[in-house]
Image (cartoon, rainbow, N blue to C red; front, side, top):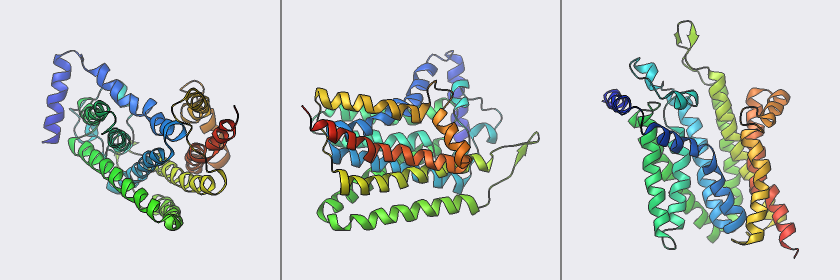
Amino acid sequence: MDITYLLWLQDFRNETHDILTPFLNGISLFVFTWLLFVPVFVYWCINKRKGIFLLLSLCLGWFMNGFMKITVCAYRPWIRDARIVPSSQAFEMSGGYSFPSGHTMWSSPIYAGVAVLCRKSAVWVSWLCVALILLTAFSRNYLGVHTPQDVIAGTAFGLFYVFAAAKLIKYIVEHPEREKFFLVAGLILATFLIVYATKKSYPMDYIDGKLIVDPVDMMKGTFHAAGMLVGFVIGRCLEKKFINFQSPGFTFKGVLLSLIGFAPYYVMIFGFTGRTDFFFAFMTGTFGPNWGHFVRGFVMTLYIVAIWPAVIKIFSRRN
C-alpha cells in the first residue's frame, strides 16, 4: 500500500508538471536551513527556559533518529521499487536509510514546541506550526523520498520528545538538585550510541556492484548526534555553574547580539559557500570522518548552549 500511495503521488506530480514540487521542496529545505535557528534564537534572545525546552527536544529527536535509522536499516523507496522516481532536488539530499524520516523527526519537535509555547499568546502561530508539521510530512511522500510509515513514525516520535522534554524540564525546575543525574544519563546515552554504531552489523547489499548504503556514512550521522548530546550536557553544566546568563528579551540589543552570534553558527552548519564546509573539512582531517562529525556536533551545541550565552551576558551588562 505504501508503494501504491507513492506511485499515485508521483503520477499526480507528473500530470501537473511539478506545479507543487518547488513549494514542497522549499518546505523540506527549510527544515535543514532556517528552522534550526528558531530554538537558538528563542534561547539566546527571548526566553532561556523556553529555549532549553526547544533545544532539548531537538537533541532528543536527533539522537533517536540516528539510533533508529541504524537499527531498522530500511532502504529508500526507489531501492524497494524501481518504479519510484523521486524529485531530483530531494534525491540529492536524501541518502542513507529511510526509517524514520529525519526531516519530520527534527522538525516536529521544533514546530510542536513553538506551538505549545504560543498556544495562549499567539494562537495563529500555533496553528501555522501544526500546518507545517503536516506539510513537512506530506512533502517527504510527495517528493518520493520516504514512505508513509517513515513520516508517521518520525512525526509521532518527534511529538513524543516534546512531551518528554516538557515533563523533564518541569521535574528539574521542581528538583534542581537532581538535574546532574539527567546530565550524566545524557553522557551515558551518547557513549552507548557511539559503541552501538561502531560494533553493530549492517546489511551489505549491492546493486550493480555498488553498496546500497555505506555503513561508514551512517556512522557519521550517529556520531554527530552523539556529539550534539554531549555538547548539550557539557554546555548546560558550564552555563549553569559559571555563566548563568539571562535572555535579554526581544529588544534591539537582544536581537542584534543573536544575529551576530548566528554568523559563526551558520559557518559551522553550512560553511562559507554552502558547498565547501571548511569547519567540517578541518574537523574531519584532524579527527577522522566519524570523530570529525562528533566534534562538529559537540562544538556546535556547546557554542549554542554556553559559549555565545557568555558573550551575551558580557554585553548585556554594558549600556
